[in-house]
Image (cartoon, rainbow, N blue to C red):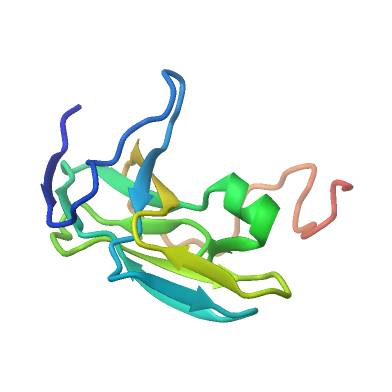
Length: 143
């Protein structure tokens, strides 16, 4: 699959770091640096826009290294880029640590993954078929 991209940043196009990588890195397209305080959220521009084919979505995902080492993740967990969106990709970062985190110009801040999806037709009914789990919720099947 090919994705058309406009890059208004001075940084490389998103790229996969290894042959088996599912996510391509996104870079912080900021003037110099931003300080992200504990529990603070910030919208970080990337300078790129993409044209995603119908039937696909772009997923903006956290970088595991930032999460483990610094407590930096995405405020919206996995962000969805719809196939009809043509604006700049921006990343909502949140600092879940107890220390300030400095985001520098050009830092790799998130990953971009493309996935295929299907639309469904919702059919309203009065009841659903039963299963072994039934209505058991969070923690119902153990840890």
